[in-house]
Image (cartoon, rainbow, N blue to C red; front, side, top):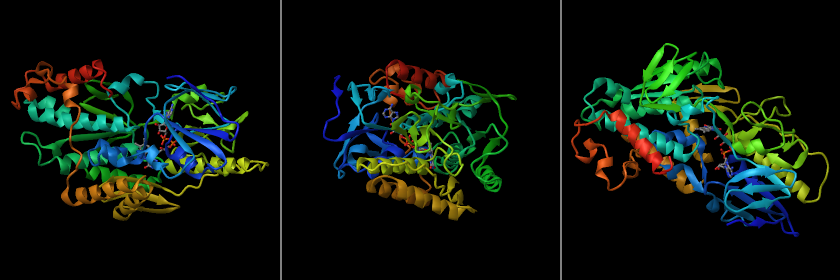
Length: 469
Ligand SMILES: Cc1cc2nc3c(=O)[nH]c(=O)nc-3n(C[C@H](O)[C@H](O)[C@H](O)COP(=O)(O)OP(=O)(O)OC[C@H]3O[C@@H](n4cnc5c(N)ncnc54)[C@H](O)[C@@H]3O)c2cc1C
């Protein structure tokens, strides 16, 4: 259906693109009695990205960290939620082209479409090293990891088993550290007693970092503590590592191939493709260089918020791509527009980022925190991390569900979300010929072809059958 959505004469129309942290904060703070607010997202849910790694490592289920956008604004009349994808912004015509519903014009536009994974010019690696940005990414990683353990349990080939039980995480930032720690716990504690023919505790987990230390946003002291905590969990950390290639065999560094069935990419982000259509300067990661008030230079009616923004704030600090920054930007733009919608004029205030600190968790009872100069680690940091994430998670049901899962996982040493879904579609439902014979025939160890080929074939079939990955 193609239709043009014209602004009414009565009220100004504000179009908000993206219901991430920035978009939600904006829509919650904007005065909807004075403007028509249209919130457009290509998903029907808000994703709480800081907990994606727990879905990828089977600690939480997909619905625990997502919330329907419509439900968030059920009680706030005046926010018109639409499921669609913005393809192009025509700032001269004040119009956004959408994938499904034609185009929509605006009086004000706020763009908060977030970031995507950055392979730094090596996009061909994406097929072998999925990034972690969406729920689909997290579910795919979990599926691949759990399936590799299943295949390792079936093979008699020791080399192949070692390959299936090797997980490489690329990127020593908070995401990579959290993933590596959680994979270590999954294999050492959760899966340990589940298999008869393999010992999941022997799983090799390797964290690859290009620079001389992990956790660069933290002080060297806290980063060193995190390094030691990860090593205690059995994670191998390779610093100053230069990746040469990633393919179906694993990951190759300057000193050779690390055979691995699973490589997960947590190394970097770049701005959404939509930013390329904006008439402004962008940095190397595609982020838009905004004016101090977050508007686009030359277009005071268009604002950018969140991860797509490149800004050195009024206090001279580069604003980081984190959720508090996105929320603060959303609220800042809402304050500006609320004032202008009331007919007030005058210079707009510049955005100033309030840095409340950083935290990263390494695993059970282990974390590092730097909260306004107060630096601590271990159990207190872990508790602080749990509380902050529960507070910011959207939706009471999600908070309750996540809290109960964490309590259960902590005391029972179990991860509740170890179900592999999509196998039937992966192997074509009803076509036993397309399934790996060892599974179809129920004969563990009788693999007629190497397990690796089954995984590759399954993935090729999944791609060929159009199953979303
Ligand atoms: C794995 C991971 C862990 C993280 N951990 C932390 C953490 O611990 N602490 C922290 O502070 N930050 C963390 N971050 C960063 C934080 O999640 C981001 O800074 C924050 O989500 C940015 O908010 P945003 O509003 O800019 O974009 P997002 O939250 O990414 O939201 C963008 C929204 O736009 C929608 N969208 C995208 N393109 C389009 C389009 N063309 N049309 C319509 N809709 C579109 C998306 O569906 C999405 O809903 C993490 C990020 C990741 C990926």
